Amino acid sequence: MRDQPPFRLGILGSGQGSNFVALAEACARGSIPAQIALVLSDVPDSGILARARERQLPARYLPPGKFRTKLEPEAELAYAQALREAQVDLVALAGFMRVLKGEFLHAFEGRIINIHPSLLPSFPGLEAWKQALAHGVKVTGCTVHFVNAGVDAGPIIGQQAVSVLEDDTPETLHQRIHAAEHDLYPKCVAALARGEIRVEGRLVRWTAPAFPLSGATSKAQ
Ligand code: GAR
Image (cartoon, rainbow, N blue to C red):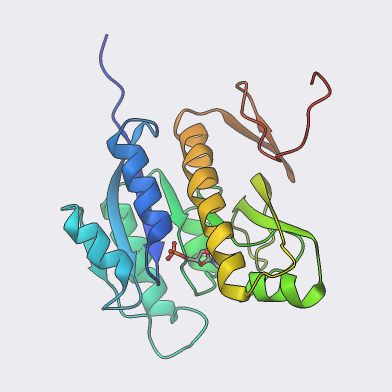
């Protein structure tokens, strides 16, 4: 029997790259059956590019153009072209701080996912952990979701809850959310790479027995 070609991941990030590291380590130890084909960043000296290069993975800075919160249309085409050339099966956003628009979404329809530091639909947008603290919620967390034309609005693949503590600062809360992200994101990407995720409109079904992605207590317990 011929082996399947490996599932290829493209990763986009703007920051320190800790979620990228979690994904790269899970690929390296085989818990995600995939290889990282390309890492792209809109920030030339970002941690994510440094972390990728340390691991000898293909990593490129692509200029975003003149806008602050989105890619210029030409830049968006360049990102899409680079990912197409790298033959990626899935684009995983890992702290990519720009909204992706029409052409890009069209090129990778249904194949772009994101991790967000709150339990969506609560607190979309920037610095979600600060929004959670300011709102006074007692539980927040992180969400992995498909990317659509809305902001942090696509079908939800998985979530992990994090308690908010009385003495939390933005930093301590974000730190614990980060730790939850590093657990959740590889599990979701692994399920996608194994073809264990089915999307029915807004709803995402896990077709293989999954771990309790919501952190909720199951009826059987
Ligand atoms: C993560 O907390 C991620 O959820 C967030 O940026 C951080 C990146 O950290 N993304 C967003 O807020 C997107 N709306 P990392 O660079 O260490 O992975």
